[in-house]
Image (cartoon, rainbow, N blue to C red):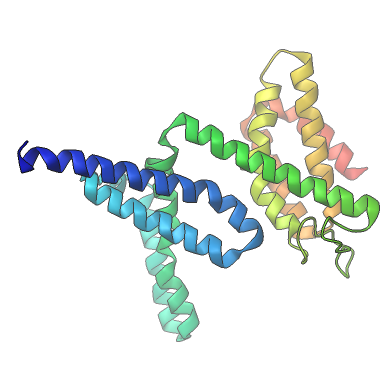
Length: 248
């Protein structure tokens, strides 16, 4: 076997190892977001670095031609210029690190989540986390404490599985990628049981957000539901009904 024939095989093994590591970090990332922002930031940065290495090994840079990358690069450049103009060191350091978030998005779109199996796995993880958060909010609402023994915040906002009042924003981030696809899929079926299940899930999640008691999260959720109703015709009637429930 010639050395030339060994190169593709070794690069293929390296690419497979990089994909395995990137997939593991991607599945772990939502869990880290719950309890450690520092570790989640490390995992997100690691995914971006692995993606760059994978692209170099595979010699595949087609993802750099994505239409959304140009406005993203322009946005990062504007953030850096404005931060340097302000003169705050913390500002321009954060601006220098900003591209890692867009690199993470590119890695998920063009590498990790290309496989339908991985997409379903990640969707399952997000769905379980959303239900874990809502369950902890309801336990705190009904019993006065979450599983860790912490009561609601001083202003009455539910903290869910957290010690601090950040359950509203976290549920907002999980609502549309984890819960809404299930709801919309249920509303697009003709089975009454599926439609009823989707309606119950929608009412439960929106009611949980209202009970959490953080106003900005509620406003942003309402804005997202409004956009969904404008884009998805079958969601318009449930949207009107859910607004009645929220008002009640």
